[in-house]
Length: 365
Ligand SMILES: Nc1ncnc2c1ncn2[C@@H]1O[C@H](COP(=O)(O)OP(=O)(O)OP(=O)(O)O)[C@@H](O)[C@H]1O
Ligand SMILES: [Mg+2]
Ligand SMILES: [Zn+2]
Image (cartoon, rainbow, N blue to C red):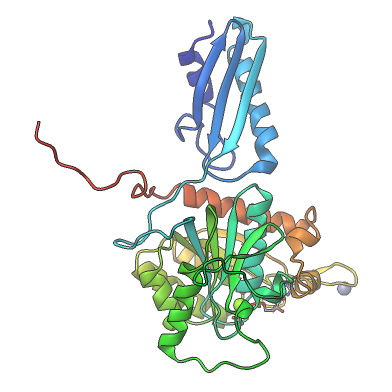
């Protein structure tokens, strides 16, 4: 067999990306194949961030080419692996926000299930994989991200109108908690709340975000409706605990997004198993299998399960979430695997071409 572009493509068409379950030719990731004598070089573009896996994926490709084209006498194979995240489709008729490619809402029906904890850890896991990420705290009544990110002070403004995002652990962040005094309770009425959310979202100068993670408040009220109907959301992740009541509420959250055509990327089951901080033994306090059952009932994916673990609470409440506090630990690995899965599922959604193709022009020829 000789070294030709066709042979190289054919060899790569049999190589399955473990993240997508598809081969790299089908995903159109293989680009710029160059053959120079017995040396091959190519680019491999991934549609999701995976910095931690570039080396391993590159090695996989080199091994596959050497195995498949071995008797053609290959000397060198150089593979340049990189990620490129593009905007994906949102609800019909809603325009994307400047500086933001994809918005992912982290929601639940019930309060206190761990949305904010999940949101900040997933955002940081995407940062760890090389993505440019923002975190918007959409909880106007009870913002938690300033504390979870260990941030205080106020955002800067250059023009007196827009806000510069705050920055922590490599994330761009915005929260009403940066703008109002958290000691003085605010009295918000419905329209003010949705207006505040719109302003936080639209008046922040987000800088080239691959993903904006939106930490939703509990419930299915005004903010949720605004987000579902007026904000360009690419996908939603539903957080639930294993208890039945929480599951019932989670179903409400899920239905709301379905109704407005926002795809559910999957479910995260939080606090699923209690890990004893004394001896490390695991106990299913809230029963087991709730998230899995819900995933099955609604034909959505169970993205992962987080234990009820005191360290998760201590780290996030102390301003240094688990993914940065203990980046190589078991819990961080769960968050990272969920984040990769979310990014891969999102990459499978239809692309948004509005930025690429301006208005259609009709010409006389
Ligand atoms: N897996 C976990 N293990 C231990 N503690 C957790 C876990 N997940 C969240 N917590 C803790 O539970 C509390 C509630 O979590 P969090 O604030 O993330 O919930 P929420 O769904 O955002 O709540 P709200 O509905 O009020 O916005 C926090 O103190 C958090 O540290
Ligand atoms: Mg919260
Ligand atoms: Zn114990």
